[in-house]
Length: 248
Image: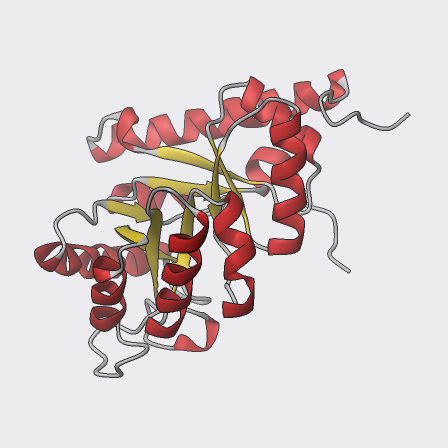
């Protein structure tokens, strides 16, 4: 027997409920340790490789925000979830190619991975044509200054890849709204060091763009350090949904 789009097996729902309870407890404990209000931190369930039935079940358990990182999978999943009557807020969190922006703007509520002026411009054109309101955007930051893994580069004068130029381009685009920054701790870095640096970049961006208050940082293994350093959104996959299937 396979899952219906609108119905997850009772045992799977129980697994998801247990995972959600554990993650929520970790977030609450991290907020308490950091002296922050629990309501300041939003959980984004990263559901890449998991079926629409899991998204629907999580929505039924009170999860309001869902993250995906591949357009082909995300577009189909968003359609299936909507058909079942669920309406989470969709975050596109993966690297985005300019040839995918027309698809992404149709279902995403937030794009967290804008890291160049050229991408911002393409996204602006697509969003203006397809939407009746601006698309929320986070500028992805290269915390270690290496853009090869994605991310605008702080302090760079590069007119396409510098953090300042990218943030300015998003803020000036009529089809976009600069909501804040996103970052991933570089491999080999202590999470606290990475997120402390990201928080400093975020504070600097807010000097020029006070509306950019969102800071998306932290995943299953390092959400506590991210919350300690001001994350407003944490992106959690395996700790919530279990070990993800192997991608082919």
